[in-house]
Each structure stands twice: as C-alpha cells, then as structure tokens.
Length: 111
Length: 115
Image 1 (cartoon, chains in turn purple, brown):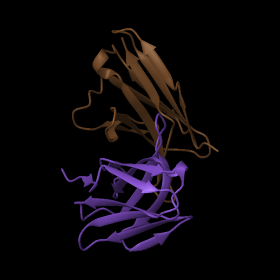
Image 2 (cartoon, one colour):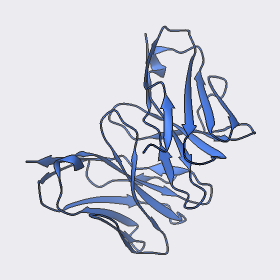
Image 3 (cartoon, rainbow over the protein chains, first blue to last red):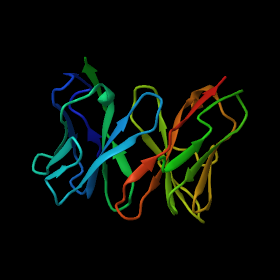
Image 4 (cartoon, each protein chain N blue to C red):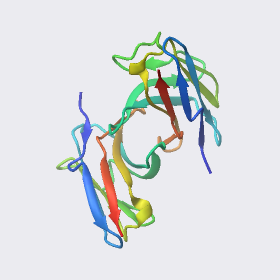
C-alpha cells in the first residue's frame, strides 16, 4: 500500500539555528497531514497539522509546508532549542481516520 | 495536561501469561481509539481501531485472538496481549481521535517485556 516516508533519518542542528525536516508521501488521496514529536520512551506529541487544501500553516516556532504537486511535506522549527531534540514523524490521514506514519527523523540539537 | 492516560507504563511478564493495557481519554468522550505497536528505532504501526460498543477492526497481519481489544465505554479501551511470548515485547501506544479535527492524541505508551 501507499506509505509516508522521510528523506533523511537524522538531522544535526546548532542551537539557535532553524531546522527543516522533510517528508515525502505517496497517497494523493490523503486529506490531512500531522507532525508529531516523540521523545525517548514517550508517546508521540502533536505539533501541528495541515489539511490538503492548504499549502502553509504556522504555529508557535513551527511552520508546516505542503507541496501537493511533488507530494512533499516539511516542518520548519525556528530557533531550535535543546528541548527540540527528538524523533519527528509525519503522518497522513484520510476519511477513514487512520494515520500512516513515516519512518521518522532524529533531530539532535548541538549546544 | 495529558489528554490520554495509558497504564501501566512498563510491564514485565513471563512467557505464556496475559497482560492488559488500559487507555483512558481524560478530556473528552472518544468513540474511536487506536492501538499501535512500535519496535526500537522504528515507526508506529497501527494494530487496530477500537470502536466504542462494537468490535475492533484489526489491521492485516494482526491476530485478533492474540490482541484482544475491549472498548466498553466512551473513555476506556483496553488491549490484552494473550499468551505473551518474547517476540511480543514492544512499545504499545494508544491514541484517541478528536472529533473536531481528526487529530489523534497519544498516550505515554506501555513498554512490554516478555521473559
């Protein structure tokens, strides 16, 4: 079946810099996309979502961009902090309410 | 504060025994909950959809008789791993779907270790 995937498995970023995490998806029928953050030993934490009829959405220090033409999703984190170190997953959903998760990107923030 | 409470957070059991994991929706009534399994350094894999008042819907390859799901109320779903074996050792996570935005909020997960 179709699945969501990530371009890079790891990302190292200097504290204070901006981070960009990428995600490629293949299901053109997906209605919405969600970014989650998962710290070691914990459940995923909701960050931000975007519907398929949008191309950009901003939250607190985060921006999600959706390019349906190339089926690409990205999460931008501004002024990355040590607390941002975690695994980030993109997930896609459609009208059956199930989520399909990508492989995850491990973000490490260097002090 | 936490939207979803999952218990226990960690359990060790002997091979052949059964383990029950609880998932509670704290802030709202949840007609639909989901159960996932996550192996180390891997992504979340959906096991089943738990529907209040009806049978759970299992994903392909997930044994319904091995992973019993009960969703008897709008705030509680349970997953019972029956006759657990070492290969069932994993991180089990539940989620609750919000009606307004279809966003799923996750519990803290349960680490199951079968000896």
